[in-house]
Image (cartoon, rainbow, N blue to C red; front, side, top):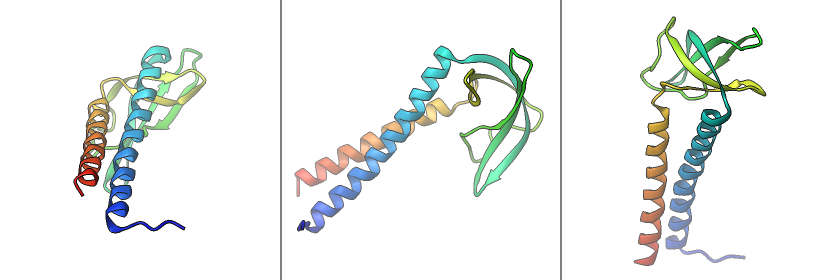
Length: 133
């Protein structure tokens, strides 16, 4: 059906990787911006840190303004762990889904921008390599 040579195949692989990084970063940045703008502020506490492979995710417990306790695992993990059990954290959560939250003091926003930069760099590199082939 399609007759792709090795240059085309490498280009497609590079583009898929670069665009994948970009989409991941943009989705995370969009979620963070939405919660910063529309989220409800709460103070929580790290009740434990869960390990998944080489990545550590804090499990946070907090009280909503309606006096409902929420316990949820933070979807952003780090290595080494950025949080310790018993640590207090400021967060913003989605009032429609309190298990969707961001830790305000978390440095994951910077890491997300790094992912976006890596994605853009890989994409530009791939286009440059393809045009020079």
